Length: 131
Image (cartoon, rainbow, N blue to C red; front, top):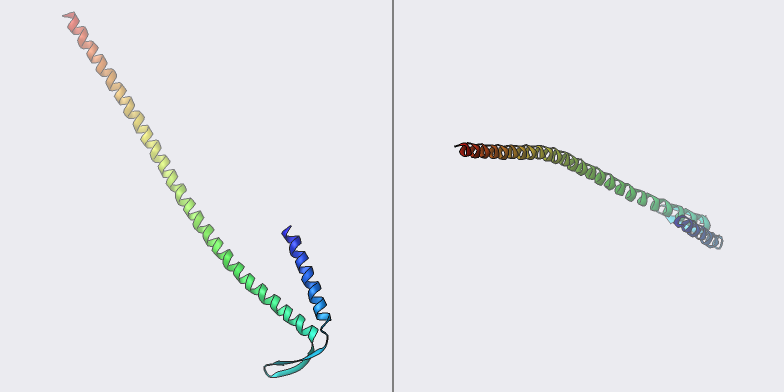
């Protein structure tokens, strides 16, 4: 849609410039630094138009290159941060796994200790009952 609008605007500009240049076909005297010459006004207008278009293209291209360079730098920085966070996440997962294993072992030892304590208490009760 945008592209079609741009094409329509360009066509309208071309028509407008064509009408303007056709209406101005007489010769004009141009003084450019040390050179003086006569040139048809239509050629002078078209020449200035082309120079303006070229300068506009040049400035926009330079700005576009600057923006692309900034985008690349930001993408690189972003990727580095992602890599750092991924490494940190991997390290935290490994630490979590180790702590989970320790907790399971600790719970197992506590349970084993409680069972042994219960066995000892029952053994003492049996011995006291025998007496």
